[in-house]
Image (cartoon, rainbow, N blue to C red):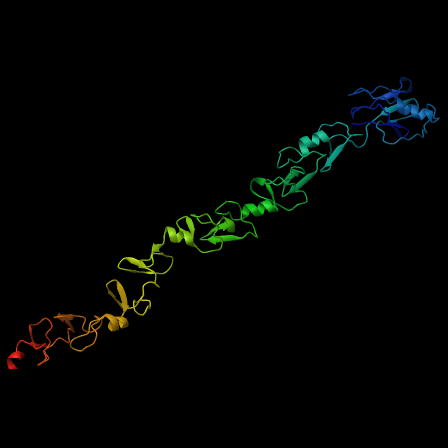
Length: 367
C-alpha cells in the first residue's frame, strides 16, 4: 500500500517513493535522515523533510506549514521524531496489486485494474475472432454478444456493419440486409441464384425461375411468360412441342397442337374433319363415310344415298329401317320391301318378281 509523509498534518510527496507494507510503523530519528522503512522496499522520506526545512521551519517546530498535493508518504509526530504510516485509500490494481498512479487503468464494476489484467480477467470476448476486446478497442454488443468494431462484418460479403442494419443468424453470424434478403429469397430453378424483390419471374407448380432462365428444353429460346408444354422435368415452346410430340393430322399432315379428334385410330384437326359436300365440321355429329369421304346426314341423303325403289326416299342407314334389301341394282328399305298385291313384308322371305314388281310366293298364282 502506498505511504505518505506528514509533518504536523501537512503532506509531502517524495519523487523516489516506492511501496511500503501497510503494517510498517517506524519511528525515525531526525539525525538518521528518516530513511529506514524495510518491509517490502526502502522508502526514503528525506525529500519531504527537506521541503519542510526549506520553508523556514526548524527542527522541533510543531507548526510546520508546508503542503504538497498527491503525496504518498505521511510522517507525523513531535520534535525529533516522525512516524511512517499508511494512506486511507489504496489505488492499486484489484488483481495484480500493482500501483496505478501515473498509469493507464480501467474501472469496471467499481474496481480499478491495469490494462493487462483487464484484458486477462475482465474484457469481453469477441464473438467473431474469439479474442479479448482490449481497453483500447471499440466494442460493439448485441443480445449479450460482443465484437471488435473491425470484426463486426457481414458473414457473407464482409462489409462492415458498424452503424448499418444487420441480422443475427445461425451460429451467431451477422448478415447485412442485402445478403439476408438474398439468402431468404426463393432460388431460381434454372441458375439456382436468389430471386430478389423486383426480379421478373415465372412460377409453375411451386417452382420459380428468373424470366430469362425459363427456356425451351429443345431450342433453348426464352419462353418467359409465353405458352409452353411441360414434359416431365422439361418445358417446350409451342413450336418445338409441335415438331417433337404433337400428332400429325391425317388430312393436312400438320401437327395437332390442341383439340382435334380421332377416327379409326387416326388423328384429325377438328377443322379438317368436315363434310365433303357442305364443309361443315363433323366433330360430335352423325356422319357417313363413303370411299374415304365424309358426309353429314343431310348431304348424304341428297348427294350420295341410294333411293328406295319402294318409297323413293334415300336409304341413309339412320333411324327406322337401318337394314337394306338389294335386288337387281335396286334397293329398298327393309320395311318397304313387300308384296305389291298383299303388302306382306318380304325382307328375309321368299318372293317373286313379275313384270318388274315384287310379290309374295302366293299372290302370283291369283293373278
